[in-house]
Length: 281
Image 1: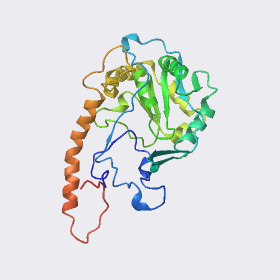
Image 2: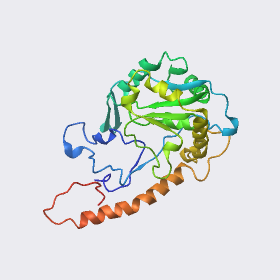
Image 3: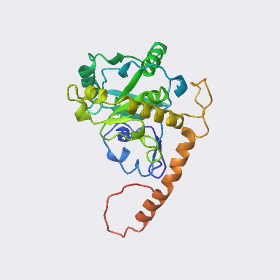
Image 4: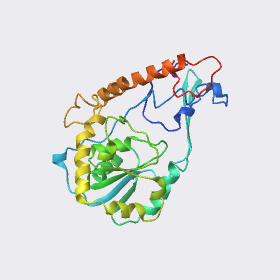
């Protein structure tokens, strides 16, 4: 009841709306419904990136075509939060074809390509140093769903001036409509990437001029994903027109659509039936 009429700030529009806020049971009245979270009213915000921002003037040679670092195998995980010994939330992260299984298949297809680096890694100090080196010496960086469609990796890629290669058919990203991701990212379908040699052949045919243009555009937008209180960047302070201001701007853009949804709900005559796009009232 509290979530439905609120503008919710989320970092992903994956399967998290299946959250059971009661006891993990199957009672649908206890589940967050599609009408409670909505692209119409809610705002997707970027993860905090963990790598230092690389400025275009400090860009270096990038001998690797494509880089990916992460866990190869993703498994079903159950995360439970307790408060006063009562179950508050239970979140189920599924190992689905749109997540871990696609990642594993991509790994098998590309691990032996001569100009591709696929590294098994974990979020520790050594892994961070590997990521910095890998992302800064690669032309393109693979972004493939893990437990959720998006991840902090995408924003580390942008901070490293590596061109994101986003493997997804329907990913939702922060600040759509305010920035055009196609100006600095490459989108490829899941189906095409599952074809042997397709992805590497496609990426090798991208010209140096195209990659240079994409990288310049990455440099133009990476401040948008930077939080003003980000302590990881020691080279300079975050710009005023960073992530927080863009979140507020996006909220401001949502308000007329929310008001329209509220008006539509109020004028619904008794006995009429039509699907709710937004439970905004």
